[in-house]
Image (cartoon, rainbow, N blue to C red; front, side, top):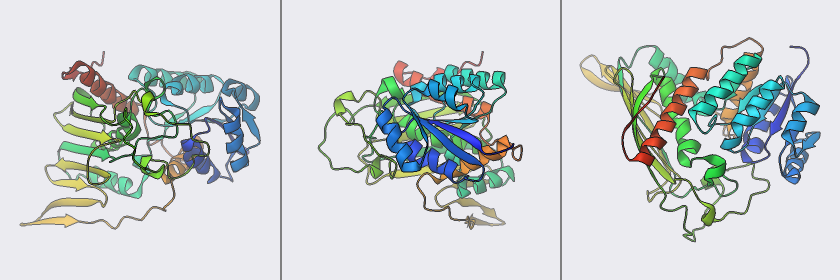
Length: 367
C-alpha cells in the first residue's frame, strides 16, 4: 500500500474518542484520521478539535463521498452498525466496527456478505481477545494442555455501572443492555478459546430491576465504563431506560460442551466482579490472573504463567486491534476475529434473548 491509509470515523462518542481514534493515532506512520461525522456536528467538531482532525460532517454518507476513506471506524449505537458498514463497503472502504457487530445474526450476516461482495475486510472490535493474558490462554489451549474442554463460565458484573453518557440504555438505539455491552466480550473471548463450537440451545433470563428507577446514588463515569473520552455527555434520565440491567444464561454447544453466562450493569454485590474459567479433562484455566490448574504426577498443581503486563491505557485493546487490522490489510497477518466466530457469538446472544422473552429453552436453527 502506497501512502497512509485514510480513516473516516462515524460517531463522536466515548468509544470513538477513547478507543478508536487513539488506536489509529498509535499508527501515525501508516494511518491518518482524516474526518469525523456525527449527527450533532458540534460534537464532531469537539472531537476534531481535540484530536486534530481536519474534516467534520453531520452527514456520514457525505463523508464517504467526499473523503473516500480506506477504512471506516463505526463507533455509533448498535442499531446503526449494519447500515453504516454496508454503505462503507459499497464506497470501497474496509470497516473497523465497534462491538457488538450488530443487533441480530441476520444483520451481522448481511454485513459480512456486503464485505465479501465488495472485496473488503470487516473487523469487529472484540478486544478482550487482544490482551496478553488472552493470547497466553489461547497458546495454552492450543497446546492441548486442557484436554477435552467440557465446561466454561464467564461473567462480568458491575455493582452500579449503568452507562449514563449516551444511548446504551435505550432499546431503540442499542437493542440490549449489559448482554451486548459487556457479555459480548466475555462470550466471544471464551468461545474463541474453546475453538468456537456451534451453539445448539440456549436458556436465558433478563432482568430490569434498577435501571428504570432513580436510586439517588452518586456514581462516576469511570464506574460505568467510561474512564475517558466523554467530551459531551448526553443528559441521562432513568425514565428512558428500556433494556435489561442484568442477564444470565446457559448455552449448550455441538459436541456436548456448555457455558454459563451472567452479566450486569447493576446488582447488589460487594463490588464489581468478573471472572472466566474453562474446564478440561487434563487441566483448567482461570483468569485475571491467568492460572493453569492440572496434575503433575501424583500431585495437584497450579501453574502461574509470567504474562507480560499490558500498558495501563484506557481501551488499550483497541490499539492492538487497530494495529492488527492494518497488518491484515498489508497482508502481514491472518485476521484473528473471524466471520464464523462472530456469527456464532451473535447466534448465542440472539438465542439468549429469545429464551428470556419466551421463558423457555430455545434451539438454534442453522438452516
